[in-house]
Image (cartoon, rainbow, N blue to C red; front, side, top):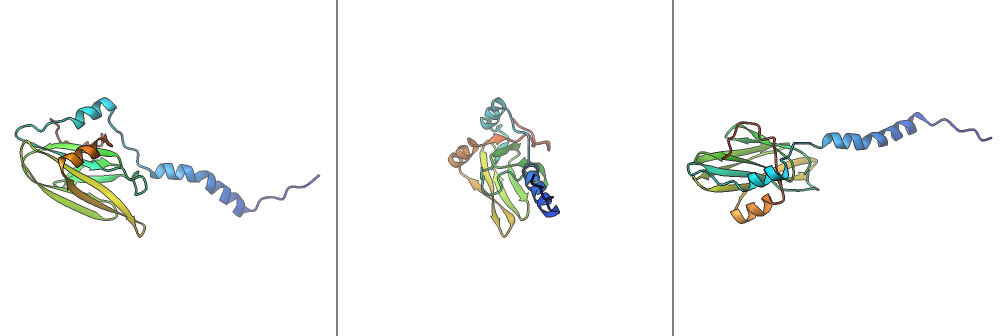
Length: 165
């Protein structure tokens, strides 16, 4: 009868690490609640009230560039919500200048001069460089904004009191 050699501590630790890796990776991914398909369609088809402007902040899907990493979004210095790749936020705002700010390892902001009755689309994304997530914002036209919006679902993490029409 062959006798089994006891496994070294190093081999046992390596095996345990391999078993724990999927759990660790799953814990690193942000889980944010998304709207139901019915709610999502409602939010995608909002029209701005006559005396306000509508802002869509769209986190474009980027599976290879930190798509599952959540980004906190601030609007005019106050919390707006949290987005992951493939989600969006929306708010009705009074006309005038408004600043959108996002931060992860780097930060960026974009100032919009919004007019009543208009809809504005801002895309947010990130690039991985030197082991850090570099975030970016850009305003896009309505055609591009609607196209990007169709690939996304509404983030229910819009809990900061911004009103919707």
